[in-house]
Length: 194
Image (cartoon, rainbow, N blue to C red; front, side):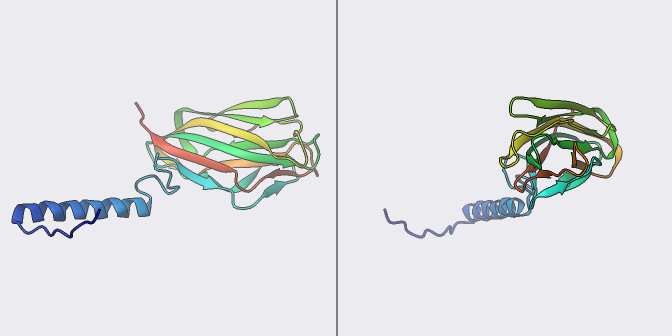
């Protein structure tokens, strides 16, 4: 089917067409700058933070996993989820995923962490605002195949939050490497407060 270029020549129709063109340009700009769909560009309000390269920790002291964090805005509520591919130097070493909360977080705010601790068991940990916590895994299913750690929760900010919500990693055994693999992600989106 061939289409013919049809120009709008009458005044009111031309005005409507220019308004439509202007609105479409605004929508395209919003998509490009992340206003629609968040900076992760998912279109459903989720913003994604991906781990670009593997992160390791061979100590029992939690370390921040680079990039798996976000800075919440004041007086907002967020739904937060994470998927973390983990391995360790030995099946008897737990790759322990944790969270570090910013200050200024109010109720209701809590997360649940789940990390595999063997081929048949998973360790769960509940963390409430202000209480940094690690899922205390006592092993990993495999040294060579990744296992999946999960996080789900709600974060609510007061009038003056400070800092970032961060994912952390430590090893259950000192001097034995735990690893979060590239491609792991944290995602978050603002949700209504009531």
